[in-house]
Length: 272
Image (cartoon, rainbow, N blue to C red; front, top):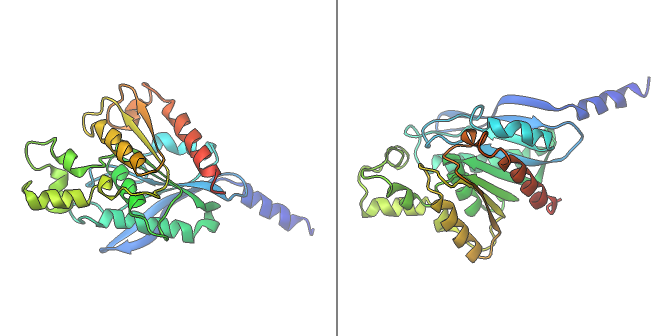
C-alpha cells in the first residue's frame, strides 16, 4: 500500500497536460488569458511564450500558432500561448506591456507547469513578432528571457509605414496617428525594436519568407545587421519564396519547424 502514492504521483508528473483560458492578469478592463502545455515527464522543460499576430487589431492565442504547437510539444518544450490587449480599444504600449506581464507570470508560476524560468524563449509572429522583439530589446531583470524568435516581424515601424501612400490602419489604431508628420515619425521610431538594440541582448532567431509582401524581408536583414553590430547573436532562417504567414509555408518548406526547434535546443541548452 505504501507504494501506491508514489506510483500515483509518478503517473501525474509524467502525463502531458494542456490547460486553456488561464487568467494571468487584468489590464485596462480586460481579462488577459493564456493556454499552457506541459510535456510528458517531470521537467522542468525549456519553455516558449507564444505571441500571436493580427496587425495589432485581431488574432488569438488558440489559432495563429497551430503549425508550431504540436512540434514544440513533441520536442519536449512547455509552452504558453497568450492573448494581449488589441487596438484600437487599447493603444501602445498596452500590448508590449501585456507581453512583459506574461513573462513575469510564467516565471512566477513555472513550477506548476513544469517550465524552466531560466530557459524561456519568446516567439512571436507578425505583430506578435514586433512585440517579442521589442520586449526582448527593452527587457529588465524581471522580464529578461533566454532567447527571442520573431517571425516576419516589423522591427522598424517607420520603414513599415513608408510602404503605404496614406496612414496605415495599424498606425492609426495602435498609436492614434492620423498624419505621417514629424511627430508621428518620432512615435513610430520609439516603438521600433531596431531603435532599442544594444549590447547584451539575448540571442535572436529571425524567421522570414523572402517573398513577404506585407512585411518585407528587408526588415529582418536590417535588424540582424544592427543587432550583430552591437555584439549580439542574431541568426536568420530565410524561407525561400515564402509569403507572409507560416501556414502558407507548410507545403513550401515545412523544414523551418525543425530548424527552429534545433536552434532552440542548442541556444537554451546553455542556460540550464
